[in-house]
Length: 125
Image 1 (tube, one colour):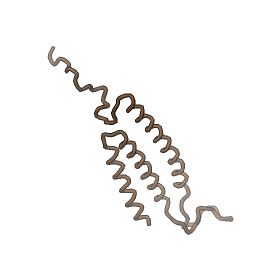
Image 2: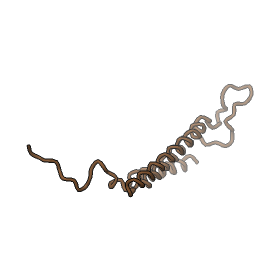
Image 3: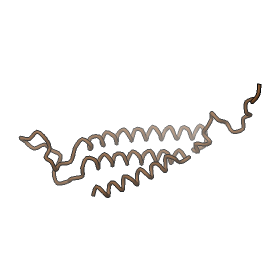
Image 4: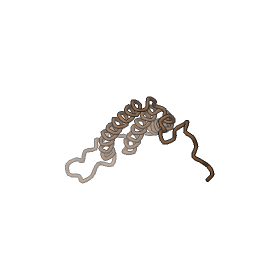
């Protein structure tokens, strides 16, 4: 089961990197979302995937039983889901605002610091 999740994590990371390296800001945004999901799945897989023993400390014991899943990655994932959703909402608003202001979602056309048809500065003095 963990090997299948490892392959899925690799596919998520591959797809995320491919989308983040794109020129379209919408594809970059989807790549960031996919990257967040890949990291969450990686944390979830690292915490062991067992359904036999719940992560509850029984009465009279101080630690979890050896076959139980680690509850810490699950708590980290819940926090990461909230943070990644708020980050996605911020990037979505930022992308929409940039599209409204510039009229494009192509990152090459968004370069205001490097206008295309400007004269070059003088070379010699």
